Length: 271
Image 1 (cartoon, rainbow, N blue to C red):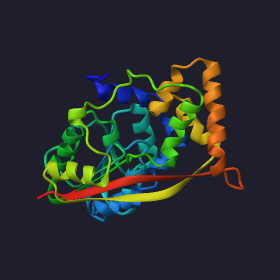
Image 2 (cartoon, rainbow, N blue to C red):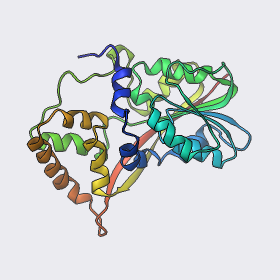
Image 3 (spheres, rainbow, N blue to C red):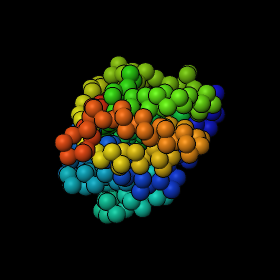
């Protein structure tokens, strides 16, 4: 089924879940922050907007570089977390593709794993471009497809537990979607009018406590969390057992997991 309000559904996935996100997915999503800011040319004196700031990780990193930061998100709990993490930033409620800021108001715009959650990614990139002055830069990250091992873990646990992904899960309409590849993401930025659009792949091993990594889905975050919410307790317990079994090869001597993963990082210049 194609949900005509994909964005509203996505926002519902994060409502009231800022703490669980920070414990689980937030730590994963923090990894590309430095490379994202490098790609956007964020440094001392630059004015940057961090769109979909979440708990404020990227905003705090930009402040640490001496930038002037505006951080926006749709979820009140995330905004509260961002205010604590980045007390020098101006934190506002806003969501792509309609940012309540003037055109050309920023030297850079960054969106860390935000286009994954936007029903019209092209409109989202166009809005990021709109708010950046000529000569400024836009930089974004998304998760790639095919999925790396970390992301495949959830689907494998569901399948091993005999749980099928419901066919009615909302998703981006095919005519609005784009290939989650280096070429696909660079092409999305180029189609929005960004010059010198380019994309590369970041790879790393995400170190996490097994309980922390399970905490995100257990709280209903992401697609896996949405699927788990629909299951009876016995089925959720079966999925958890399969998660533990499938994660065992990645367990380190200290009990943590080292899960191989990757992200696409793309950027371009506003002419």
